[in-house]
Length: 289
Image 1: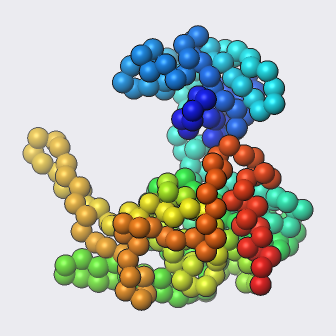
Image 2: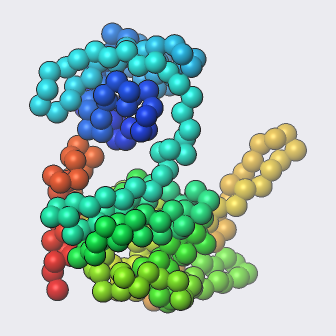
Image 3: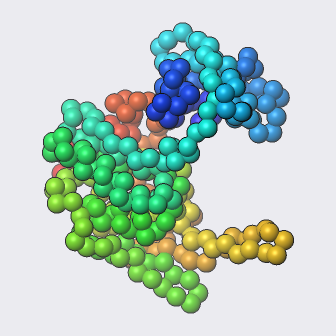
């Protein structure tokens, strides 16, 4: 993530090249091969990422600043990275250990609903929960049916609205009978941001209108139209927005986004979970009757 001081590391692939040299989420990349990260003339139109990419086995020097520590230079040996590693669901306990935090990076991943179920089940295997946070702040959307199946983990049935085109309308029904019983009385808060889009917005809005979750953060992208792709003979494609999502009351979130129950404007990506202002506010929401 680009910030004023450089490139802020959002996530690291376990066992990957960055992990091997001790780079952690929250670290700041200030230079690449000696060129300042913010020196646009040094990197060309593709930006700093063009210098990080390269042939497997080759190296790149990064100047790294960890919070509260002196800057250091590390040599990172490039490897082929499985991009799916960045879309993995993660789960952890935070605070006093009774609050769970599930991060869902995307709904474009096949069987993402199963991954979420496994993550929640793993948390519950280590003890009961007094609250659950679901982080979709960097989730740009994906498959609507997988989004519905994910809601069904936490909510037993219901209707979260409809999608409609000029000629058709489909109710967005949540499947029943597959929710996790141990979560029935566990309060839930969902974290959203302006990067939360499409099916991820439908997820947050759906859980909100069903009364199953409180929403915390900043208004989402307001981009819930369903796109369809049409090819041309020359190999190009056109994407057309053909369906719109409406809440059960007929209102739309297109153009203005999901509005949080608790709006917290913060550069949350700069903080570890225990100091994240939005997570702290979300935990407070969980404890509010």
